[in-house]
Every structure is written in C-alpha cells, then in structure tokens.
Image 1 (tube, rainbow, N blue to C red):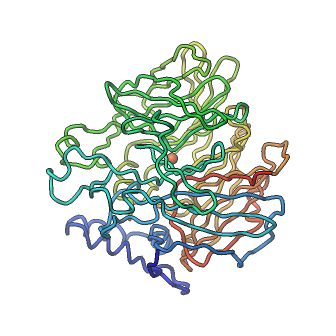
Image 2 (cartoon, helix red, strand yellow; image 1 turned 180 degrees about the vertical axis):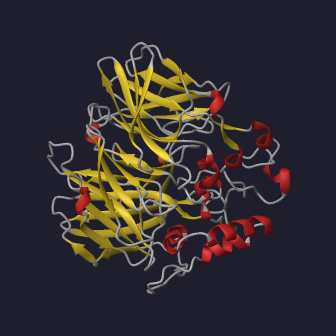
Image 3 (cartoon, rainbow, N blue to C red; image 1 turned 30 degrees about the vertical axis):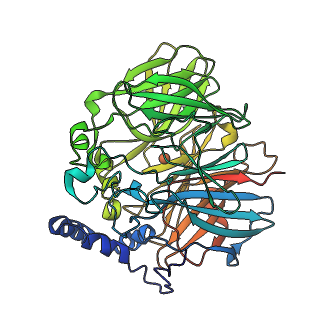
Amino acid sequence: MTQTPMHARTSTDGPGLPELHRYLASLPVGERDQLTAQLATFSDADRRSLGVSEPQLVEYDYRVDDIDGTIPAELDGTLYRNGPGRWQDHSGRPLHHLFDGDGMLSAFTIADGAVHFKNRYVRTNHYLGKTGRYHLGTAAPGGMKANIGRLPPNLANTNVVEHAGRLYALWEGGPPTEIDPQTLDTVGIRRFGGELRWVGSYSAHPCFCPRTGEMFNFGVEFIPRAHLRIYRTDPAGRLKHFRSARLPYVAMVHDFALTQSHLVFVVSPIIPDALPIVLGRKPMGDAMRYRPERGSVFVLVPRDGGKIRTIEYDAVLMFHLSNAYDDDGDTVVDAITYDDGRLLQRLSRFHVAPLDDAPSTFMRFRITRTGRVHAEALSELPGEFPRHNEAFEGRHHRYAYLNTRHHLASFYDSITRLDLSDASAAIYTTPEAGNSFCEPVFAAKPGAAAEDDGWVLSVEYQARTHTSRLVILDAADIAAGPVATANLTHHIPQGFHGSFVPRPR
Ligand SMILES: [Fe+2]
C-alpha cells in the first residue's frame, strides 16, 4: 500500500482529528450539530484521546529502535493484535459503528531484547472493495432497496489467535481468515473442509484448553431456530461440529468460557428488531436492543457429551467473560456486566461517544449444581477487556488483568490487576492525560510456576505526539508501571483483542 501518512505530526498539542471532522461533515445537519455540541463538552484530555480512533492507512515493517527501559531477555515471541484500522469503506465513505472498520493486524515480535513492528490490513473482500456498501452499523446509500436482505461483510477485525501452527483473524459473523504469521499476508478464508457451512459464523473468542490442546468455539445460527453451533478443534487443527444448544431468542452472543468439564455461555438479551432489518430500514447494528424483560440464560454444555443445562436468570448485559472453573459441582464464571443498554447506542455512534455513563461491574456468577445462580460484584471499577494467564484457563485462578477507566470519558487510561481472592486492585494509570491503553495480554515467563510469573503487554496511545508504544509491565507488580516500552513512530488505532504467541522452542 502506498498511501501517504495522514499524520506526520511531531507537535505536542495532540492530533488534529481530521477523520473525525470528515465524519462529522458527512452527517445530516441535525446529527452533526448534536455531536459537535457533545464534542464541545469534552475536556482537553478527552478531546485529545479521540486521536486513537483516527485511521492508520500506512503499513509499516521496521525494527523499533526507540526503547525505554530494558526488554526482558526471556520475553520471546509475538504479540499479535487486531482491530479496525480505518472506519471508511473502499470509496472513502465514513462509517458509523465501532465494529464497522476493516481489520488491521499488528505484530510486535520480541526477541533478544529487541522489538520488530509490522502492521497489515487483512485483505478481505470488503477491504478490496468487492462487497457492497452495506455495513453492520452503516446503511448503504440508496434507501431500502439497497439495504433489503443484506448481510454485513466479513471484516476480520475482532481478534487474532494461533492454534496448531496457524494464525487466524476472527470476526463473529463469518468464518476465520487465515494469516501468514510471519508476513501478516492474508492466506484466505478457512472453512475447515466445509465444517463451517453457509454463513459460517465463528466467534472471535475461542477458548483453548491448556490440558488437552483443544480449541473450542461457536457461531450463532438462526435457521431453523436460534442456536449456538459449537465446534471443537483437536490439537492437530482438525475442526468438527461438536454440539448445538438452543437459544431462547435471537441474540448476539459474543463470548463464552471454558471449565475443565463445561463450556459456559451467558446469553444477554441483545435482540435485534427484526422488521426494520428485514425491510432494509435500519442496519443491523442500529436495530440491536437490550431487552431486559426477556431475561438471560446460562447455558452449560458438558464437554463429555452429557445433557446441556439451561438456567434462566435476571437479565445480564455483557460482552466479555473472564475465566470460569468448576468448584465442587458448581460452575463459577466471571464477566464484565453493564447496568443498562446505553452502551449499544454508544457503540453505534462511537466517534464522539463517552462511555462514562455506561457503568460496568466485574461480576462473579456461581451456578450451583441444583441450578441456582448467585451473583457477587468483585469490582465496581469501570473496565473492559479482562484477560488472565491462559495456563489457568478453566481452572481456579487468582488474577484478572483488565483495562479500567479513571480520568477519561471514552477510553481506558489504566491497566489493572484484580486479585480475586480479596477483590483488591493494583492499578497503573498513565501519567499523561489523554493517553489510553488497549486490552492487556498476559505473557508467561518460560517455565513459570506461579500464576503471575510473567508480563502484561499492552499498547498505549500517546495523545500529545499521536504515536503508540508497546508497554511491558511485570504481571506481579502492575502498579510499578512499565519495565520497558517500545516507541513506534506513528499511532495504531485502539483495537479490540490479541494474543501473545511464544516463539516455538
Ligand atoms: Fe470481544
């Protein structure tokens, strides 16, 4: 790709936000005035922080020479990250919804105390301009006729995971896109010999069993009625349909968790208004509603083939689960939950949407063997993107790492370790107002025995210089701040999820 960088800024006053202004200019006058007025209420730091949503149109490949601190010698592998790199279609038309952007992969390869950076867009049909102009949260121009019966394009923009030696860019509404782990070149859509049939929904949040080497995942399907179609991939990379589980209603299901004995689903009543979608009056993302009166269900799917249990419960609004484990016949699962459905509107108009009025809670749910559910709030810190040491996936664990928000309205300015044994928090907040972090990923020290023996890797957006940097923290001492940073010469947008893949030994 040969585009010129949107920004070659070295100033210290923050980004100029050209894409944000282009987006606002594309809106109908009433909506533009409303959002412009909202923007005027932002603090200087909050306004600067919006630079993280400016696009990165350049694809880089270079050794990072600007290092602060010492990269740990034992940290040896690649942090892959995925997220929208631009919120515009191939014609340059601005897009509304946070989930509408083309997937852009980043790779920070760490070896011998040095860091190499590379980013590359996934060459989806959408990126290449081969799909229509309908998006999850942006209608195609041309009214109802242009929008009736459309499905959103596979943007491969949500997560990037490795299994059985292959790397996949994931998007929950369709099959995975295989990526070359060295070059980040797009290999192509993978349907695993036709096992991912038709639409091929395959969530962006597979779970990996450290005991068996299996990868579990699911897709939501609606025909003949709403259900979870669950897949199991063996350690050699062979994917097979494993089970299916009925859903009580058509719902968005984004994530699940794994214990030693079960797959655990928490189904939120995020339900699309079918009629406006079917008639082409609204894109799918704008028609999603939180319907608490429909309640939630916990779906427990035994890994050994036993009977699936569905437990009805009060409505729980969540996107991301943390870890889960078996406890003397009970199932324990942690999640980030939201108080109400305002978040959905925020996502659909994310460019200037503050999240601080969509409070979240780190919750623990215990589903007893008799089918009762006990809920306990572990932390009221507003947070998202919970991760843990994946060697403890499905087992009783002590620590969760997540982003929390303390000063900013729209992005997460802190990395937090929750000690789940006593609900205490160790927090590192960026000292620079306007900076923000993406999801913290745990990287274990080779041969580690203790759960927190390793590092937490994140990417910090630095608003004043409109650049990003890899941040490496000691997982046992988060509050001490970074042990090292690798400073890029440009920014990368916020992004959603990623994985640390140790170098094969
Ligand atoms: Fe997610």
